Image (cartoon, rainbow, N blue to C red):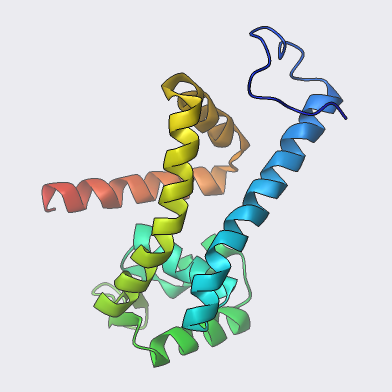
Length: 175
């Protein structure tokens, strides 16, 4: 496999649909995910949290007041697995829940102040790496990256993004 170099000349990537280029992208996504997890590992270890805890914190940061069933759907985990993770986060005081007004049986979850603090601390690692990468790549490349990522999302994941967008707009306009 030919190694990718960000300094390759313009036009060199016109054959981007070749298997070699697709495999290169797959490898880079794998390595980027692994490196991001590795960068967060010391913080998670210090807090005695795992990747499952982080994923819950991350989803609740962009989708506060989410029903447990929707959280399970977004994470793609079993009810038992999610229950164990939620229990541990609740014991630490990282979560708050309230009954849904429309259906009192449904529990809505959000991060507590302490949970928000932990999530912000973890997100700082992600932010730092993305800001560095975005600066290095430039605005046009960042927009291209977003388009590629969007193209890879399932309809279900696109719905999550749309829901997250609405939540952000409501928060911004005080709705």
